[in-house]
Amino acid sequence: MTTLNEYLDSAGCSSELKELIGLISMQAVPIREAFINNQSYSGTENTSGDRQAALDVWSDEHITDALMRSGLVSEIASEEKPDIVRNPKAGTGFAVVMDPLDGSSLIQVNLCVGTIVGIYDNSNALSMGRDLKAAMYMLYGPMTVLTVSVGKGVYIFALKSGVYTLLDGPVKMPEGNLYGSGALKKDWTEKHSEFISAIEKDGGKLRYSGSFVADFHQILKYGGVYCYPATKDKPEGKLRLVYEANPIGFIAEQAGGLISDGKNDLLDIVPQKPDHKTPIYVGSRGIIKDLERIMK
Ligand code: AFP
Image 1: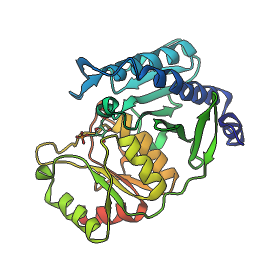
Image 2: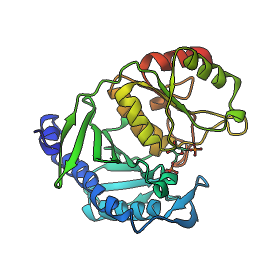
Image 3: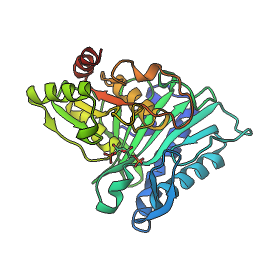
C-alpha cells in the first residue's frame, strides 16, 4: 500500500513541500478529536459575515499555530481571519490559504465537513489559483480522507492508525449527472435557472448538503456540477475565491474537470482581497462548457 510520503516522493516534491503537506494533513487527527467539545457557535462572525462555529475558530487557531511553529510558511490567509498572518522569519517561500472548517453549519448535525488548503511557493497568498503549487482537503466523514494534488493528477488517501495510505488515484472526474445549487431559488438569475432546468431535463440528480467540500467530493468521484451562483441581490455570490474556489478548482482541473464563474475560468482570476467572493460552478468539463454557452 502506497503511503502519502511515498507518493509525494514519487511525484518529485521537495522535502519542504512534503513536510508541509504532511504537517497539514496530520492536523486532521486533533481536529477530529475536537468535534465533541466544539459543538456550539462561538458568538462571532468572520469577514464574510458568516456565524463562526466554535470548531471554525478552534481549527483556525490550531492550524495557524502549527504552521507558524513549523517555520515553513511565510503567509497564511484563512477564511476565519480578517488579515493575512505573516511570518517574516520563515525560511521558505510558502503561502498557505485555507478554509479551516468548511461546511460548519453541519457540525451540529454530524454531517460531512472538511478542511480546504492551497499552497503557493511564491510567498503571496493573493495569487491566482493557476499558480498553486499544491491543493488538498481533508474530509471528516465515516473515514478521514485526504484528497491532494501537487499538479500531477489527483490522489485520495485514507487515514488509518496515523498513516495516510492510497485509496484511489489518479482520479478522473467523469461526465456524471449529479447537481447541486446553493442560494434560494427565488433569488436565482434567469440564466442560472435556465442552466439548472437544462440539467434536470437531461436527467440530473439533485445532491446538495451545505458543505462545499463534501458536495465537491461527490462530484469529483461521480461527475456533475456543484454551483453557488450569483443571485439577484448578491451578484458576487457567497463563496470565497481564495479559500474555497481556488484550491478546489485546482483539484477539479487536475482531475479533468473545470471551475468557472459562468463566464471565466476562476483559476485565471487574481484575487482583489482576501475575502474576494465569486459565483462558483465546478464539475465535469462538458457540463461547465454547456454552462458557459448558456451564460454568454
Ligand atoms: P463555511 O462553513 O466555511 O462558512 O462555508 C459554508 C459554505 O460556504 C459552503 O461550504 C456551502 O456549500 C455553502 O456555504 C452553503 O451555503 P447555504 O447554507 O447558503 O446553502
